[in-house]
Image 1 (cartoon, rainbow, N blue to C red):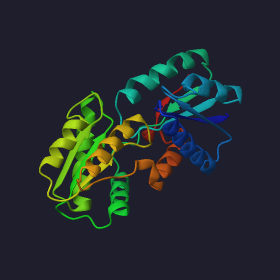
Image 2 (image 1 turned 90 degrees about the vertical axis):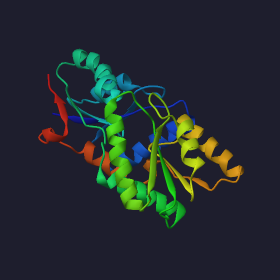
Image 3 (image 1 turned 120 degrees about the vertical axis):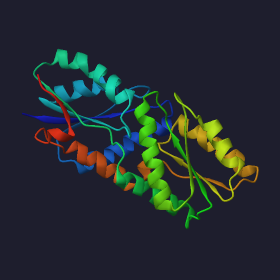
Image 4 (image 1 turned 135 degrees about the vertical axis):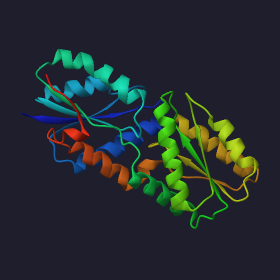
Length: 254
């Protein structure tokens, strides 16, 4: 059996964001000892999943581990990626496909966020406010995940106020979230994007933070999560999961 790894990112219309994601994945590939490794995206950025899958098969893969580069489990993981893979499974019935899970809520990711915050601002005061900004999804599990992340951040940073908002698909939306937390903040407002890479969504946040900084507000934007090495470590681990570790991988054999 010849194993391949197919990395699946979300994709973005932002050239900067796409290049950042590809460069990140090239660093992952350099750390994984598997000869066949391909990069693909769900939407907006080429190559798409079918092209990446076909490249793996053309190189002789008989087992493909799909590694989604997604922070949380929602519609893309539950529906869109499986739907994209289904016709490929039908076309190549002799190729087994494993789909690794999304990163999920992990203590070390919350640790990494806290480290990124402290690296950017130094000492965090109890009176500072944190605005956690997610991509957003209609899946109710997303709200549960962010509630857990919110609690973990408050404990690690020692702040009393951590609020959550989203950039799309659910509420409160970013415009409401940043206005609400800014209206009665007594210290700095620390805006934490729960996003992996640069892109149009992060650009929206950057523009609003800059506007408020120019108006005199004490507000700071923290870097996206892929800047922390732990994210790369997680992807490498998922790429190295074997079929025998079935508890950590959803496996589909033909």
